[in-house]
Amino acid sequence: MNRTFKALSAVLTYPTAELQLAASEIGEVLDAEGLIPGHIRDQLNNLVSELATGDLYDLQERYVLLFDRTRSLSLHLFEHVHGESRDRGQAMIDLKSQYEQAGLLMSAAELPDFLPLFLEYVATRPAKEACEALAQPAHILGALAERLRKRQSPYEAVFRALIALAAAKPKDDDVSALLQSPDPDATDLAALDAAWEDEPVNFGPGGGDSCKDGLIARVRGAMRPAPGVSTPSRSTPRP
Image 1 (cartoon, one colour):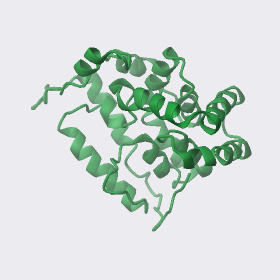
Image 2 (cartoon, rainbow, N blue to C red):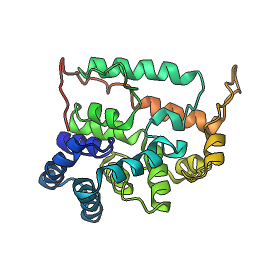
Image 3 (spheres, rainbow, N blue to C red):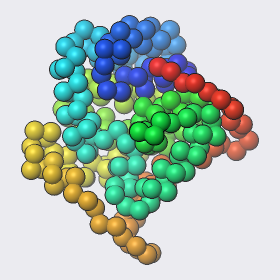
Image 4 (cartoon, rainbow, N blue to C red):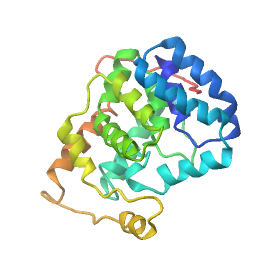
């Protein structure tokens, strides 16, 4: 199971020549462990094939338009529940600390809520704990999958695979709450500017949205170690 999480992490990273060379190995890992349902695996096969054979600049442009320019498709998990609020900073600190306890060291340029990095962390955990941790942001994964489906993007398959592996499936109400946020097209520059405007920081009781607060609590829950589970002293996760 750990290798599957690492493979999915790699698929969600920025396309490079190295990723293209590793694409066949990624496909072999997903086939060998056989954890992903067949119809989703077929869709993943298509994406992995595109990454292996597609024009690198086209692949990179597609990735940037989807995940870097479109806030509603951000691969930073806390973006979808914290936005620009002050809680995001503390959540980052807590998550980074948990990574370090598990032996996963970050570079100075990395943010701990980046989904591919979170999947590397999940890959260091025992199978049961890994699936439980993945279930906590499942509503975020579900919203991202729906937005990618709307765009007919092959990256949808990665999020469907993660939901299939999670110990609990996202609740429809939680996914719907996230889908209410603006979801502009990446070519609509005015809409993108509006979506990236800083959100107001609310202080004091009652300052935040109760629905979003509930989502935050569930995501933060994924960052806490399971009771009685020891953490490895060192790990070197690789795709």
